[in-house]
Length: 103
Image 1 (cartoon, rainbow, N blue to C red):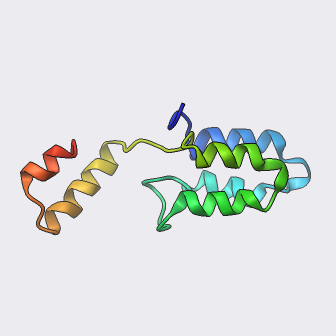
Image 2: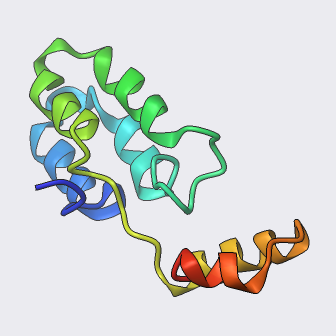
Protein backbone atom coordinates (compact mmCIF):
# COMPACT_ATOMS: atom_id res chain seq x y z
CA UNK A 1 0.00 0.00 0.00
CA UNK A 2 1.47 3.35 -1.06
CA UNK A 3 2.22 6.06 1.46
CA UNK A 4 1.84 4.00 4.61
CA UNK A 5 5.32 4.52 6.06
CA UNK A 6 7.49 7.52 6.91
CA UNK A 7 11.13 8.12 6.15
CA UNK A 8 11.72 9.81 9.51
CA UNK A 9 10.47 6.86 11.56
CA UNK A 10 9.83 3.64 9.66
CA UNK A 11 12.79 3.90 7.29
CA UNK A 12 15.09 4.74 10.19
CA UNK A 13 13.87 1.64 12.04
CA UNK A 14 14.32 -0.68 9.04
CA UNK A 15 17.81 0.60 8.24
CA UNK A 16 18.91 0.57 11.89
CA UNK A 17 18.02 -3.12 12.12
CA UNK A 18 20.11 -3.84 9.01
CA UNK A 19 23.01 -1.52 9.87
CA UNK A 20 25.83 -3.99 10.47
CA UNK A 21 29.19 -2.25 10.47
CA UNK A 22 27.54 1.18 10.27
CA UNK A 23 27.16 0.85 6.48
CA UNK A 24 23.90 2.78 6.40
CA UNK A 25 24.57 5.37 9.10
CA UNK A 26 24.66 8.31 6.68
CA UNK A 27 21.27 7.38 5.22
CA UNK A 28 19.84 6.81 8.72
CA UNK A 29 21.01 10.22 9.90
CA UNK A 30 19.63 11.88 6.77
CA UNK A 31 16.30 10.17 7.34
CA UNK A 32 16.20 11.18 11.02
CA UNK A 33 16.74 14.82 10.01
CA UNK A 34 14.01 14.84 7.35
CA UNK A 35 16.32 14.95 4.32
CA UNK A 36 14.10 12.43 2.50
CA UNK A 37 10.71 13.64 3.80
CA UNK A 38 8.32 14.81 1.08
CA UNK A 39 7.45 18.08 2.85
CA UNK A 40 10.12 18.67 5.52
CA UNK A 41 13.16 18.36 3.27
CA UNK A 42 15.06 21.23 1.70
CA UNK A 43 15.93 18.94 -1.22
CA UNK A 44 14.09 19.59 -4.47
CA UNK A 45 13.37 15.89 -4.99
CA UNK A 46 13.93 14.10 -1.68
CA UNK A 47 12.70 10.69 -2.82
CA UNK A 48 15.00 10.75 -5.86
CA UNK A 49 17.89 11.44 -3.46
CA UNK A 50 16.78 8.55 -1.24
CA UNK A 51 16.52 6.16 -4.20
CA UNK A 52 20.03 7.19 -5.28
CA UNK A 53 21.43 6.77 -1.77
CA UNK A 54 19.82 3.35 -1.33
CA UNK A 55 21.07 2.38 -4.79
CA UNK A 56 24.66 2.40 -3.51
CA UNK A 57 23.82 -0.80 -1.64
CA UNK A 58 22.49 -3.62 -3.85
CA UNK A 59 21.25 -5.53 -0.81
CA UNK A 60 18.80 -2.66 -0.16
CA UNK A 61 17.14 -3.18 -3.56
CA UNK A 62 13.79 -4.32 -2.10
CA UNK A 63 13.69 -1.25 0.17
CA UNK A 64 14.61 0.96 -2.78
CA UNK A 65 11.75 -0.57 -4.75
CA UNK A 66 9.38 0.18 -1.87
CA UNK A 67 10.43 3.84 -2.05
CA UNK A 68 9.93 3.89 -5.83
CA UNK A 69 6.52 2.27 -5.36
CA UNK A 70 5.40 5.05 -3.01
CA UNK A 71 5.40 3.14 0.25
CA UNK A 72 7.36 5.96 1.92
CA UNK A 73 5.37 8.90 0.49
CA UNK A 74 4.38 10.96 3.51
CA UNK A 75 1.09 12.86 3.62
CA UNK A 76 1.11 16.58 4.32
CA UNK A 77 0.46 17.49 7.96
CA UNK A 78 -1.30 20.71 9.01
CA UNK A 79 1.96 22.70 9.09
CA UNK A 80 2.81 21.51 5.58
CA UNK A 81 -0.64 22.47 4.33
CA UNK A 82 -0.35 25.92 5.90
CA UNK A 83 3.02 26.43 4.20
CA UNK A 84 1.60 25.38 0.82
CA UNK A 85 -1.44 27.63 1.28
CA UNK A 86 0.77 30.60 2.11
CA UNK A 87 3.00 29.96 -0.88
CA UNK A 88 0.02 29.71 -3.23
CA UNK A 89 -1.52 32.90 -1.81
CA UNK A 90 1.78 34.74 -2.32
CA UNK A 91 1.84 33.48 -5.92
CA UNK A 92 -1.65 34.91 -6.52
CA UNK A 93 -3.66 31.68 -6.51
CA UNK A 94 -7.39 32.13 -6.07
CA UNK A 95 -9.13 31.00 -2.91
CA UNK A 96 -11.24 28.66 -5.03
CA UNK A 97 -8.11 26.98 -6.42
CA UNK A 98 -6.50 26.68 -2.98
CA UNK A 99 -9.67 25.16 -1.54
CA UNK A 100 -9.88 22.71 -4.45
CA UNK A 101 -6.52 21.33 -3.29
CA UNK A 102 -7.86 20.75 0.20
CA UNK A 103 -5.69 23.43 1.72
